[in-house]
Image 1 (cartoon, one colour):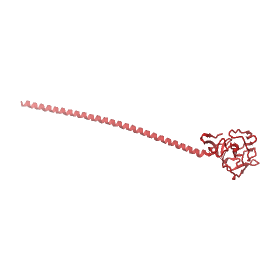
Image 2: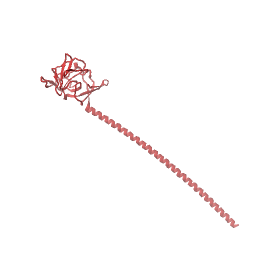
Image 3: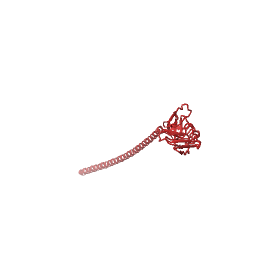
Image 4: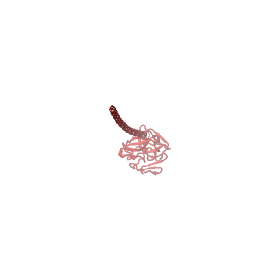
Length: 261
């Protein structure tokens, strides 16, 4: 009986141990499950963090690209603007110079108050070119067709003239008031630019004359209202008296016109 009771007690203890072991095993499994879940969650969180980091890096990269493109665009605009300004400055420093027309001697081509550009870079000048001239000296011809410089300090004529080339060096010029003709090298000039055909031969020369090398004969388009090479206070124009060649009328804007013959 005692042995039976002892055996029963041993069985109960064994069962209790088994139950305890089972419970411990269950707890271990549960803990392991929880650990796995934690690991899984951590992994997921890490993935999310990595995705966020990737997205952040992508956004940062895209933003940097946009900023870089903006800077490049600004630099390109600045460079283009500076280049344009430089070109304009060079043009107006070395090529084009503004001049205001004073008087009516070039009517109906140019009028009083018109604004024009002249250039100091040109070939010639040649027949038909409109010149801006420094009227600081007068050159006439003696009986041997030699140049004579005349003192014009007492002259009341304008110091700056705008006239058209009628005859070039080496050409023979004849002005016939009776026929109202200007004849160069035996040919009557076709002058569609003049205001009228009334021509005065002036007091400077006895025509015909041959223009010496380095000199030019100039006249205004308004033949009745122009003091030009026909007048002894102006006479022939020496090449070094020429400021430049008129190329463009820019004001008034409605009369914008290139002055190329």
